[in-house]
Length: 556
View 1 (cartoon, rainbow, N blue to C red):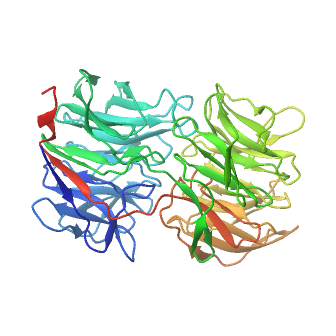
View 2 (view 1 turned 180 degrees about the vertical axis):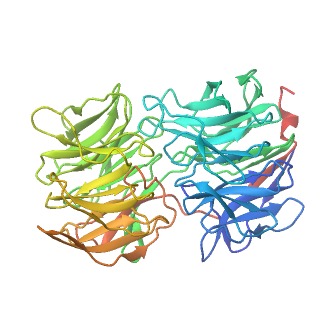
View 3 (view 1 turned 90 degrees about the vertical axis):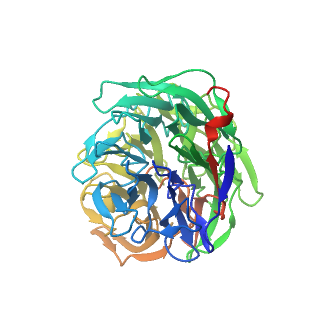
């Protein structure tokens, strides 16, 4: 076994973790590795390092690329960018658009010319011709068990594949794991429980156990493990926010991986220009959403290495207190308008909505019992009478419901079932709703009257999600498709909504958390500061390359 280091190009930083990463991937013939890296200025791009060369070369036209994967002949690379699945030749040229993929989470290119991929962060897998065309569903999520299938890998016969199935609402669910399936749909079974990607190579299944890289004998035709797992490396870099470990293998002998252990996230303050102002809380594993208290003195978050819990940070005292203790996971906290309560999603059996006093006293109270679907609180009206609840997988079925908090807990559907609605917020006066919907064919931000449903005004023009009002209702913020924070002046009167020109504020660095479902940011009442879930600053970490990695395994 020979270990060596692949050093980053001078003036570049590999982007190996986060929603917008490109971990290293080995070419099937073992001659090269592709990864995402950023220069000191400019957008991240794909780089290819031939293993017989001293330097990597950038692939022009791959700005903003994420999660690359190779063609079976090692002559082309698939990737996601700009809401599309694309391919590009390793020899250069312009990328080809294959199909829509608004939030890609991995792909695999089979020998028969088919690409299987995850088009959304919450969806099943789809398949499409590598020449382009209309994708067709390949796997379907079961909402009571999973809401995401991702990180697929074709097996050698080109008919079977592996993928990771998981649940955002319960991120360490007992049903999460690596599955073995076939293109004809006749096979789909659990191989092993786990919470990150797996890779098949040289007769073994490679996977992460905590932060150890393991290998175990695996039959790619039957999908059955045998023998015992053996450790290949420790301190493996594991990104719990996207359920992926940074490693890959190819052929009979090559392995790459990055070190760094479990990657934490942290709430970070920014001003309107995008200048970082310092942390707003402790570093936390699997930090997925946050919300400022109405008076701006406290921050509610959800995080946890296994089953997540809700935490409350006193921003002036810098004290972080755990609010929930299970059983099951607790996530997506939302404050009551007086700051006394926090509503959250909880897996106490079927997924339901609960609340607890924000000072931690007393017992939690069920507001809405679950029925097997994902249910998350989105916002609490300023009069305290209503809770907005998101229901569904938010990739194909998501809708927004209104839950009255007095009388019988009978939710009322607010959105059109023909479209997917991602997030929604009450205006400060409670008379309007800002929400994101795909009714135009992509996610855009709209405002409509609450209750009457009369009138609808489109706020974003080139894609948008995650709307948040300024406290006086005169400004609306949202995320663009490239994750830039956008500001729009708003004038509300009884006759309708008048929106001014959109203005780009900044694009945060090292963004963590998915802007489609969770709440990855919030805004102070005066609209001058933003708190955003961020990953640690990416550093120019070398990539470890191992040749003949099977030689020291006990089971030959």
